[in-house]
Image 1 (cartoon, rainbow, N blue to C red):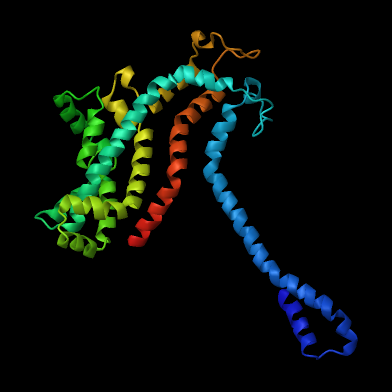
Image 2 (cartoon, rainbow, N blue to C red):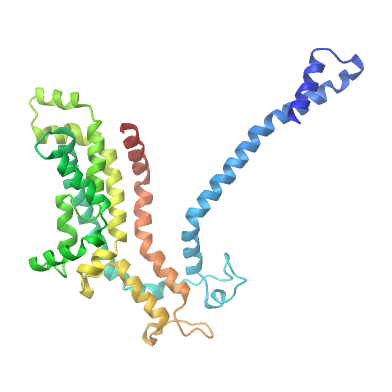
Length: 333
């Protein structure tokens, strides 16, 4: 259709048609202009539809959890209520906070996440710098072991690790999780060494040579020259280590049996147990709807949202630096 209109417009412009049709010239010109813009507009509309569709796929779990957590007992049991609840019930969050012991156990999760991330930053940045800049015997074998630690799942190593940490007397403490992070191991430590090594490999060596000529030693060169440039890759490692430590459920459940040291994600099972077998004391002082005598899925979703909320907030504050780090790392590689 666009070609036909353009052909007619071209013929008019070259004067092949009689002067009696010149009255329609302006109309055809405007129609041609409109049709020339349609493909571009259609492309933009299709692009926005695709972007919104992809965004909805990723946001759907979060939207479902948040909206369900605000539903009343009646809305939960009404299949006609899907996305917009008839009324909002904030009490679900009070139930969830009581059952989870939220403000008590969030301290454990924050402590484990902050120290574990700090350990990975210190150790993996130094180890990655060593692999990128220095030659020493067995370098390739050691780097192969680092890559192997990324590939091999922790579940296959958990038995010998548990036996070793048990002999050290570290079971029922945070030491089996935190100490390995300060030696480049721990939760995906091999991947962080690989990220740092790839960044430092592309770092201009002339800058370090110039610092050495000016009299800087290793630590001064690393602190004053290398670290300011490497801030972007540090932000990438901070976000990844922080998220993985916060969400880690497997290792704390293996090494820690004391209730006082339990991390927040492990408390979600307690909430599920309350849903399956509610205990009356939790309802004390709460306003219940008619027929509501149990913990429902709205409370379960409220507890889930409370657990992921701190890490979402933290990511929201530093996501700009994280994206810049991803971009910078990709350019260097």
